Length: 213
Image (cartoon, rainbow, N blue to C red; front, side, top):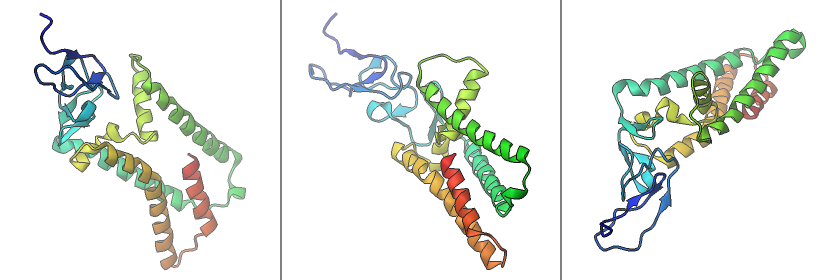
């Protein structure tokens, strides 16, 4: 009693120690669920790395802080989301030359309200950081905000990359909007090559709307 190695507190992580060691470095984890009370160096199931920051290779993060092994179907959510995003961009491009002066007021109102709703849902994303046990359907609504805040864990992006890397996820978040701009500009260039009339100002405005949303 009193001579054994200490245990790490929930929400904190300490590298595994050797017998007789008295000097410890303690790091705070991103989530208490990722670092439950455990022996020194212990993490939630499937987690590894400093402060239990990463999932083991070939795994994806779950809501309870642990990680599960990727299966063949786990890459499907990311694929579906990429297809949906591409279809939305195509739909926007198809109406890019529409004359706003000829659109009904109700359509423009719906578009404006839709943009405000997107911004409101993005603001709700900060609520996920609170240590509150939300119940359905509020919990499900808050989880959906992960997509609009570019938190790609919800689509199990690590199963696509094959590795759970915070740096890779951060770069993906940074490149999400530029990738959308690139698709729009590529489609505009292809349309010009095919002889279709597409205003550059309209394309530029569409990119601005995407950035604003």
